[in-house]
Length: 99
Image 1 (cartoon, rainbow, N blue to C red):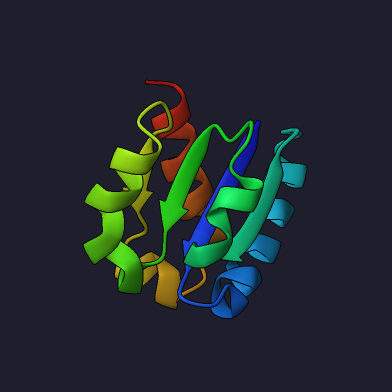
Image 2 (spheres, one colour; image 1 turned 120 degrees about the vertical axis):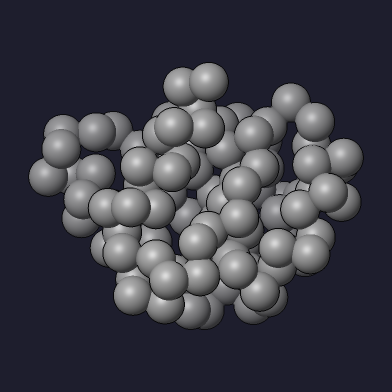
């Protein structure tokens, strides 16, 4: 499975990706989890199962959903993002993939 996270620049979300990868590994999940700036999505979206937007990018959800209608799009909860809660954010991604 391929999970993409997008934020303004990709830096802070990169720390969250590390936490998510640790959780995925502990649960024996095979997942490609990467973070990019929203402007870089186009280059990396092929094969994505879900796109998670950083809370600061929530205002762009409709635009991203229109651009990639076949891919579930969700905004990461601000608290989970701020706390770098990799487990909760991974659960969010999995719930969107399984729908």
